[in-house]
Image (cartoon, one colour):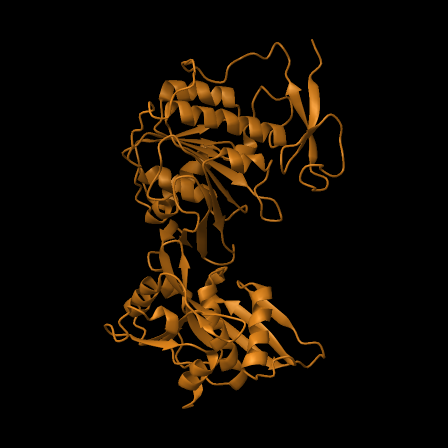
Length: 457
């Protein structure tokens, strides 16, 4: 028996080397080289699954016939949104998340609700009895959801050939093992080889495949970086295990936007879709409190109103602290410098704590005006009326800059019952300032905002 040949591959960029090196010459990362088998034993020639081997030849792009296949719509509108309108036939979707966050619950719930499709749920982590117990808690029944507990991809594809599923779910890709590779399950070589087999099956047979993947301690998907390049869509399932809300975020999508997110609430009988997330992201209080402001942000095509909480107090331990949760710390430093330089607020000797309620991470610059208003409200100890919200970016000169999709932001604020919304003066062109039940207040500089907001208090 010939000895298998091996080489070393970088997990980040895929660069190969005949020997181990500490730093990758291609991407510059340290300690990313792992050993992989590049030439298999001659006796291991078994195919993973049978398919028609069509001869490929170059074709003119004008000769290629494209059929716009309809997407598979699920009963989960949050999943439909993040996928770009539904499941694309023949797509390979990778769902990553921390252990215990609810990845298996989400995919089993999808499998049970797709009662009009033959769904095969392959589990390498749980037994049939464990999956049955979870399904009973969900109180959802389907005669077209079938369970297979196996980890050998060759055995799985034999069952697939007989069963002919319309949707395939694999939980998880780190537990799958192929006889092509001699290393153990979960290794870089096994993860890449198994993913390639499922990708070939999805593309040639036109069956959508969902792969559940684990993540490392730094939050990235476990396995080689090339894994994310192989799949069509990468979804990240986020959330605090001590909190009931979960966020399904699109990291990569070849068939739609990469800025969409879906919000769920974890309950005893499964995951509940949150169709109006602004209601859960805004706290309900009996009396107004200083340091609270409501800002309008966009996630893809969805407008969200989030609550910004600030606490500004005198630094008692010498060096002032700057802490932010859900908001970029460097951008917070910039906004504090703008307030001190352009607004005259002495924030250099103050402790500043900023929090975005609900556990969201905000990257939309339109939240700047709400952050500014929240900081000044806490510094002056003057509350902002709960019926007021903000949607504008703040420049280094203290100017209030325009943001995109202002109509959607104003409409969402009006739908949730807000009476006033502060926007940039340069966003007001073509916008009805006295539309419906909400008053649109345009401002050009921070001084105008402070005079309008805090002058009468």
